[in-house]
Length: 399
Ligand code: FEO
Image (cartoon, rainbow, N blue to C red; front, side, top):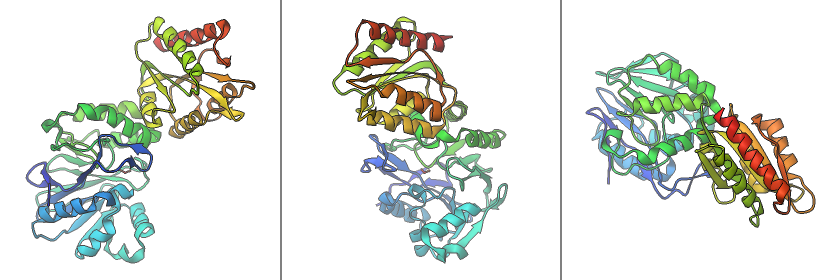
């Protein structure tokens, strides 16, 4: 049975919420679920914008059937070919044999790669700046390559001043009844927008800046992303948030994350944090890398300029969970950050050297303070060195 939601007279949400999926992309936990948004424009022509993940295909189809109310589907616009939005495309085209696909040239190639060559005759390639009149509405197509895949394009409806933005401005978290931000309490979405952006789009700051420049001259009353609420009251806030994150602008806060096997490295982290606090730093967050998924740590690295990591030596290398975090951070190409580090060992120290190697070769953050190497557990000398590390980082962040 259908559960559609209206944005206005002509736009209907025909997507689906999902609270059964444990891990989005097989990587990111979604404790509050996730929405896969698809929108239908009903004008003289009918236009569907994106499909959904196969996990919610039945709900999507019921919604689409209801919203079409017996009409043909004239077009499906494919903004983005990642399967959480395009998985249902081939089945949709099979069941709606009159429907034409509008997409970028690269999306057309990807459709062939995902679904085979049979759909090629149904596809019209859209170029940057082209328009489509559907009757009352005029749609403008805007290329947004590498936000966050190369084929991505956006649609601006100049009639309703409505932007269909693909993943941009999206967030984790299912919709809980409402759709437009003015209908709902958005508190739970803000940090989840940062987590979504930082982990999934965050590597592509320059392409995001390019897209924002293209959109800057447009009057926009609604932003319809493929995940999360439709933004209406909070457009200024979400655009500023994207602008800031894509410039890698941060607050003077500190993320301290550590691996610990028996608590010795954790105690060192506490000493570092207390020293940073005594030096006047207020925004300090601490994470045990074995207990907190790296997506939450990366979210906070996008919020705070300082990072201090600490880990034991393990198998003559770096504690595995810290290795995973540093690898994920390196993949994001995060700029304008400061980093300090410490490590522990039982009989042969490697962790400190390995963390330095990560920073020298992949992260390229500004090194702050003197790294601390701890044998077994803190003594008076390493305790003082951890205090100095926390203090030096706080001073650097506070200027
Ligand atoms: Fe929501 Fe890039 O897919």
